[in-house]
Length: 295
Image 1 (cartoon, one colour):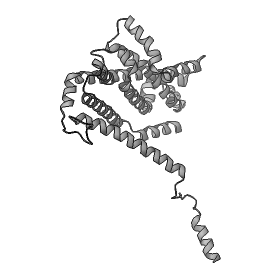
Image 2: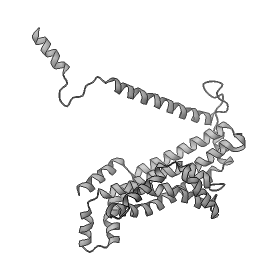
Image 3: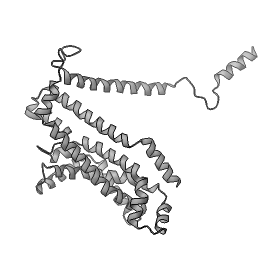
Image 4: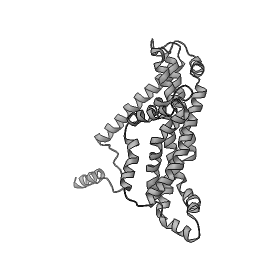
């Protein structure tokens, strides 16, 4: 009897390194919350996609008839070819300028000490932490005063305000993790500052630059407030064009047209992410940071 009791106690104990198969109530609560969220999210996406293909709906579980005409109508009605071109062009321009300005600035913050450095760093945080509409209205006023309102140039400039600080704050810790002795060794070998930056640091910074660029790209494509304040016909991005379609003529546009535009916007974002992740692997990024730290 005593032997059976001891054996039962040993079975009840979890050996070191083994995980218990019995989940705690908090774990089940977290998984249940995630499941509910995913179900609601999937339901919204499915409803929009089905609505974009349906002739008449909400009289039953499925539309009475199916058609792809809403996509062609939306493409022609709102000139989405031009809108998508403007969206991609603005996003790429913002990424390139943000990287060209933000990476050298982040290098200075990571390698140099100067009076007011903390204040400058805090200043870069403001466009990211503050709601875009708070500084978007003054920016739009300046753009219209200089005659840049409703132009692509204005859309690019206003999107640079939060994007450049974002690149700086992303790249500064990345540069700080690179051992400065690498730069000192290159300078001892006769390399100039430009050569150190382009031939030594640049290869190490490529993963961080690509990661920051991807985040800026997605942020710019989805930025509504700043773009809406300064854009107009010929300079609207896709997200602003969807909003204008929803509010034009008192919301008189067909609901299916809006759903078709929303699906195309989602597909555009997915394509951008898939293409970006084709060149940037988050696992590689972590590995490169670790290698730079060890060097």
